[in-house]
Image 1 (cartoon, helix red, strand yellow):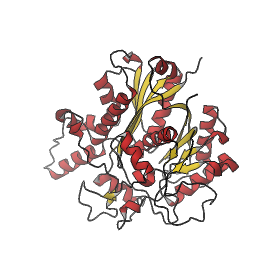
Image 2 (spheres, one colour):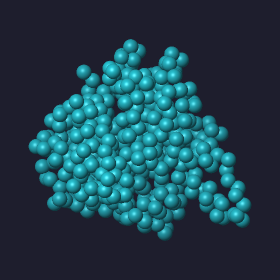
Image 3 (tube, one colour):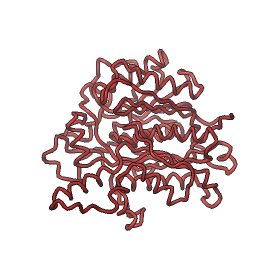
Image 4 (cartoon, helix red, strand yellow):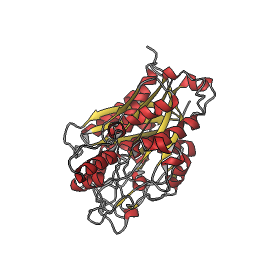
Length: 416
């Protein structure tokens, strides 16, 4: 069977540092922090009082008010990012064969705020189960791609991948394979998350996963820094239009990059902690390179999972050194979570967009907030600290890992 080439023809981003792909990129290269005190609820009794919320976003600027009320925030975010990507791709929705257009999305949690609010409403009542009729369809994780599909009439594969923080990278890999194998001509893919809620923050605080740097939220996400103390929760969405190469070329589409390959693996180790020797991370990067038919020395840039946790950052960098050997010091490594925070199931999508735009602009965004050397990190690695660096990026990798030991890796290259 012929394996088809797959390219990226559209991008959309809704992030804590920019509400469009262009605003997002501007925030990235300028080292903008999206962290600030939480505005959604009273944080007085919470250990962590800040997060990376969206700024100046109103769903009804994009979605009919009646329809928006039927959607949890994570689905609203998905709709807005997907619409931007579809418009960016300049897809002719009248001409495209909608039976061959799919929507494959990622969400690690889904409608958490909806679930939280309905349960709180019930608990505050007299025990009578008065639940909103939209409770279930607002909450379920697969409703985001369903809404995108319904709006545009896309009748190809439609589902959500759920692999915690690896969810949207997983979705991108599934979308790649759907086109490679000839099942689709076009797939709208990506991920969204809206977990900055009482339950989300309270749950992650209970795990001791979040930074508690309440006196300086904007510097709290500090991947690779010796004083890092946990991740900063973020929210938003990222969307990519993937398209079969000949299909894109025939309609004269702008091509951002080729999706060279992807990989998946499992740590098979612990519910939340990474394997200390990075065995699963080593495997996923090797799988990705093999799937793409590329060698370690071909890679110019890696956007790491880099969450700003004490164990995870070190394990990932050791795995990179193991896979790439002496070439590791020639790679521009970064973590854009230093700016956006951790978008959980949407992280893989917005970080894939970052590496694609790094290719387009010849610039690698920085890892901000680095002030203290960690003696457990190889000092020869170029972690693109505090300031963006010019780089002709021909091949770029995006790593995303999730609770449960889920590892996903996607590789992009400049189009030949």
